[in-house]
Each structure stands twice: as structure tokens, then as C-alpha cells.
Amino acid sequence: MRPDRRRHGIAAALASAAVVALLGGTSGGVLGAAPAGAEEPAEDPTTRVELDGAVLRWGINHESSNRAHAPDTYNFLSAGRVPDPGRGGTTLPRSSWQQREGDVRIQKWDGRRWRPATWKGLSTDTAGKPLGPPASGSTSGLRFTIASGEGYVDPAAGTAHVAWDGDLTVVYYSGMSMFHVSDPVLDVADGRGTLTATVSGYASSVDDPGSWAPVPGETVTLADLPDVDLGDAGPGGGLSVEPAYRGVTVDGLGQTTGEEWSGSFPGAFVAYMDRLGTAAFWFSSGSSTDPFKVPQPLAVSYDATGTDPAPTPTAPPTQPVIVNPTVAPPTADPAPGPAPVAPAPVAAPAPAPVAPAVPTVPAAPAVPTVPAAPVAAAPVAAAPAALPASTQLVAAAPTPAVPGPAPSWPWWLAGALLLAAAVVLLLPVPRRARVA
Figure 1 (cartoon, rainbow, N blue to C red):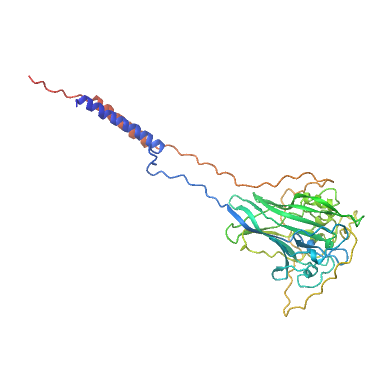
Figure 2: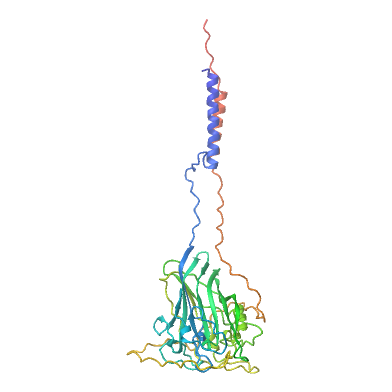
């Protein structure tokens, strides 16, 4: 091969190597190999945990386990949907009450632990004694549980969505007023949550005791949860939260405000109860049983092995209700109908050798922290406005990482190779000696 051709070939090879070095260093290599020392981008970790066995536990409030104002009538819970009696002013027979149906259970606190509720236990306190007057401070200590909840919880993102499939019935005055709660859903985001459900019931009237009309179901908020700590999403994890009530107001229903027990359940729920004629059971009305209306803590276990909290089962201590002297509050919430004779209260069973102590509540329980801006429920109109559908909350998408500056070494290597190619081209070619 002639020397000038060999020189051109060497220069071309050096120039090609310069291009390869430049492309490989700035793009990670033409064959996909990462430069030495480069790190793979880290994947965004997540703490989202899928749930399929979550358990919801809630006693609603102490009034729902209290003796009613009408003689020999009681407020209590029943699993499933209690059959429609077809007319007003009647009380629930034993055959229509259920302790369990599907994933729903009704439990009773016996002073030491939760046990399956019984028909007899609906009219006795946690020690098995007959319930005293409505404002006496003794209640039956009931709650409902719903298992097999499905959804997810993500403590790092602060979000959760859990749905349950089941029905229960809230019975007041032994059945003269009642409504159903179906398929509750928990949604949490940014430390705040809601428990929604479909409620349906029957309208009754004090003025017309025999009136009784089904009211179509609506999806409403049962509990606003202003301060939710999702806790640990691992096995045995869960949450317990106190629903908002004190300081919450409703308009147009004669609510008593400014006192220790003043407050309300969510406005949409109260509006629906107003259609049933029983709104006064769910906000401070000046009744002697106002302290019993405050919601009990609501708990969710993320699996069946989760911690089973034991909220204080006895009602707050009876205290005089101080109201505006210009307003004459009733001493009791109105009964939805007449006071029919219900089954007589069951006498307390014989005491055990050591009577279990009944948990009590401090004389002046601490008032939960209230945000700077008071929470106000939606005004209650004669006909409640349409409510927004429940929204599933999801975690925000992670922010993509910003690539760093390209390394400078490929430019130096490419420049050196190009310079070498130029030098090769500039070198003089030795001449061959001629033969005479």
C-alpha cells in the first residue's frame, strides 16, 4: 500500500474514534453502556398497601345506646335491615332484631371486653343492670363492626380509600323511629377524612303517631374526621379518630350553641334526619341528653388482626344544661310517636364473685382542639340539595428527576483524537529512491 493511502486510513480511523467517544460519553454509549461511575435513577418508593380485610368499628354515639324518653323504650343497633313494620307507633319484636348479618356484627361492652350483643342486653347497662332514666349516665354500650373492607392506605402520601359492603339499622324508641346505614366508605387525604354511607329510613310525626312513610335513600356524610393519623399500614395497623361535632352548627332547627356539649353531626346527615322527623337527636337541642349526642371515636383496623380499641363505653356525666335564658329549651327530644308498651326491661343477672368495674369518664373531659376557623356544617334546607358523589383519593404522581450536566471527558478525548488525525495528515511522506 502506498504511504499516503496508509496515512489517510490512519487519520480516518482516529476521526471515527473521536466521534464514537463523543457520542458514547454524552448519551451513555452507542451500545447502551453507562459511563463509568454513572448511577441508575432510583425508583420512587411507595408505602401504598392494598387492603381486603379492613374492619370498621363505631358506636356512633352514646344516645344510640341510651334509654329513650318514652316509657319502656330504648335506642339500639341491629345488624342488617330491620323489616318495615308498615305503620308508625310500633315497637320492634324480638324476631326482627339481629346480632349479625353478613360482615356486620353488633357488640356490647361488658366492662372489660367486647362481646356479641343479645336481645336482653339492649335494655341493660355494661354491668347487666336495667338502664336508668335517659339522663342518668347508664347506657347499654353498643357498637357495630363491619369486616372485609377493601381499598388501600398510603401513610406516606396521607391518603386512604376503604369501602365496606353491609347494612345495619339504627333503632330509636324501640322502633318508633329507625333508619338504615348501607355500604360505608372511608376517604382520607392530607390529614382529613370522611365516612360516607347510603342512609334510608321512614318518616314519622309527633302530631300524627300513625304516620309512617318510606324515604328514598341518599348518600351522605356520617362523620367528618378533621385530624386523621393513618398510623402503620403493616399487619395489625389501623387508625382511631374522633369525629367533628363540638362547634359544628346547623341553621334553621333551633340549635343550642355556645355550651360545652353544643355541636352537630354533618349537615347533610342532619338534613336527612329532618326528613324523618328526628333531626333533634343529632345536634345540641337543649335536651337533658345533649351530652350523649357527641360521637364516639371511630376506629379502622387494616386487617382482622389489628388492634381492637375500647372507647369509653359509658356516657359523659350528667350536667345541668345552661342555655340562653330567653329560650326555653325542652327537657327531652320529642318522641316520634306515642309510647306503646314494649317488653319489660330484663332484670340484671346475678353478679359475679368480683364485679367488673364499669369504666367512667372524667368529670370534665378535655375539649378536643378546634381549628382556628370554626367548622360549620352546610345549612339545612327544607329539601336537602344534591350531594357530591364520594371521590376516591389517590397519591400524587412523583416528580421526575432532573438529569445532571453531561460529563466533559468525552470532549477532551474526541479533541485529542481529531488532533492526532490532523498530525498524521500533515506529516511528510518519505519518497522512494529511484533505481537507475
